[in-house]
Amino acid sequence: MLETKGANGSSGSRVTGPGAAASEAAAAPDWDLVTVPSRQGLEAVDILRLRTGVGPVLHDSEGDTLGFLVPPGTADGWDLPGSACTETDGGGRKLTDDPPIEGAGWLVPPEHSHPVTDPALLRQALGEAARTIEAADAL
Image (tube, rainbow, N blue to C red):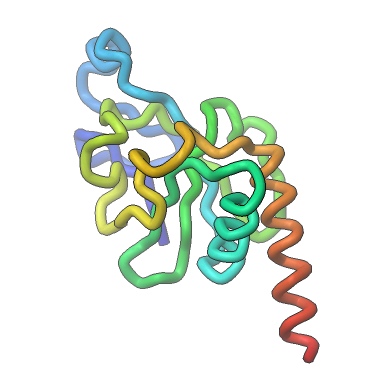
């Protein structure tokens, strides 16, 4: 499962790298991370790519989970069953660096995406993906 890690290796619901004030001065991006099961996430990525576009997306090394980078503050109101949203400050990293989560890789790298995924559009795409998976499994 994807677990956010700051530059100092800490983990948890709020990630802060060393020298957070210096990071802000360097304009490191802020983002939250929505994690979902990979099957639903892959469907959602396809839906978003065909419609409005998708922001950077991470995958874990086991292939179990995908993580969508969303605007900061999304975690405050995120309540979609089957997913989680972790608040983070970006860990003092730029999105052009290696993936900000240990053991993760880019499914949709930052240089080939929108800056972040719109949370309302992600919620819609995840709902549509869940319905598509349910219909396919019923066959």
